[in-house]
Length: 402
Image (cartoon, rainbow, N blue to C red; front, side, top):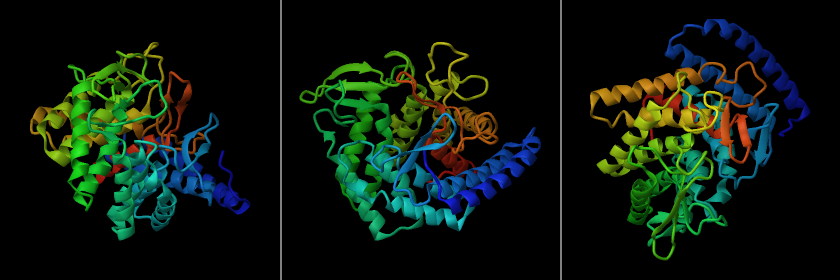
């Protein structure tokens, strides 16, 4: 649990008193409000939550990932796959509010991840560095940021196996060469690097990985496997399984959301229509199986539905991905479907019980699921859920930005 200094605690107490007053006023005012009003309130509430987290974290060298049962952020090292999402949240809230203190904090926490540019032990260097430095580069297009991002891409590219045609996801697991659907999200760093002085090789690697994932992770109905295991020597598929889903043949909700978002990015960067079609198939599956409140259960085939836990991280990722995907879709009916689905999800997330307002959570959203089969991070706040929620707010209010 992160602990604040005495002065920070006093400031935090005053902030909490202010927040409780705001919450009381808005609890009545939000009933029956338009989505624009809900988004406006969520923007203000998110700013207060991040200001509160900033006071709590103070000068800690650690980052935040998920909350404890009592709602407090738990710290993790800068090498954790989620470390980039906190500075990413700060960049997003700066984009939403133009609050100078948030930009200052964003720069500070982004630079704290500089050493991760050399991390070759994880495919998630894309998550770590592009949510932090990638967002930062849009506001601080410095040569230092560019060099760090290019080195990060070099580190990520070391995990590519040309025979498999993919970037290796995990080390030291039961699979000889595992590739997870999540890894689609790390390709954006490589596409960026190819356009910003890194060379064509990064584009080639990213497109190869996306094509292989499309071929082997995506089922005929648009649903996705979580893990595909390859033979590293021959490149052949050994198994299609799950790690965080209910079963090998089920559909893990966050993995499906990663597919929507990741293949949308792949289409944006390559204009290969196969990626657009894949993103559409993944989106259609996701939307068809949403419950009435538009927030998915942690797995679309989870036992115990309708009493299974919901996952706001899957909802937020999908909403952000759909808001970009709709801009590429030519078919009017499908475009309107994606727009409506994204807005319905956003409306749900901007209200209780999913917005954490009135609870003890340090996060912005409640009711996320990290890894249900392992019974870890179940029904908590997750920093990456907050990040994609903020990105969806940006995309809804200002239009899609890369």
